[in-house]
Amino acid sequence: MIAPVTKAVFPVAGLGSRFLPATKAIPKEMLPVVDKPLIQYAAEEAAAAGITDLILVTGRSKRAIEDHFDKNVELEAELIERNKLELLEELRDILPGHITCVAVRQAEPLGLGHAVLCALPAVGDAPFAVFLPDDFIYARGGPGCMRQIVDAYGQCGHSVLAVQRVDPAQTDRYGVVDAAPAQGQKLTPIHAIVEKPAPVDAPSNLAVVGRYVLTPKVMQLLKTTGRGAGGEIQLTDAIATLLETEPVSAYEFDGQRFDCGAKLGFLQAFFELALDHPGLGHEFRRYVEARIGRQRNWALEKSAAGE
Image 1: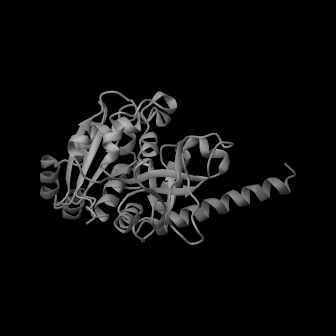
Image 2: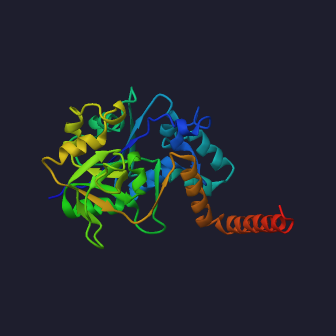
Image 3: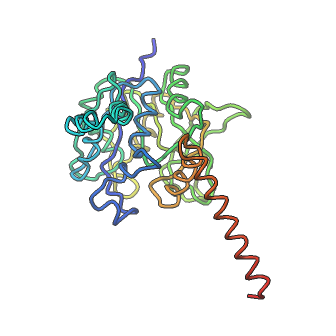
């Protein structure tokens, strides 16, 4: 019988240096995309996939993430007193009652693999998911990315990595798998995985993005995984070793990924969710269309003036 995936690890100890000075005092995972922080979208995706235990791997400056998922008695009392009951309900729904959230500390920034290993006491000997909240994956009403790969894990019973095709010139930004999916096939065996290969050395353009379902053996392998690319302990290296004894599959998910660890990706995600927002989308779309119209008229005026 295949053990269910009920635990998810969120490595959120990074400094967010690409967003400085905004992230000097605020964790990048707490930056809002319209009206919710990145970490909340990831937590909601986890809950929708049947995950009940959220494990935050934090650093010294990440207390705000823990506070976000904690109960705020004073704020709730204030909302009750002001009869703002809809806001109170939203606040209480940040973490549904059946979901638990714990935090463990990554004392040193030794890489993604090390961050995942820090969660071992909370994960134990169980399959587990890994979320990188920087990778915002928008499913537009369909099942979330994690739901898709948890279901794929339920079919195959071994580790599954979410992948997407990237520009071949950019493979040195990702872990890249050696896999050859058949036409129309989403789940396919991985033959090898390489961390940030140069384009000339990349086995494909199928890049691993921030959603994983992993078997317990990965944790044991991480204990002995040495430093790899960038001088860090890489999760990719432990998965490469896992492939020697267990199958691992890649899954080409349905959904749009935004790299919210970069400013452009963050703006793109904000734009898309603002357009689709049930309360704001109509007015925001009108603003965007009017703004484009003004830009077009300005360009025509410059052209007519011979500028």
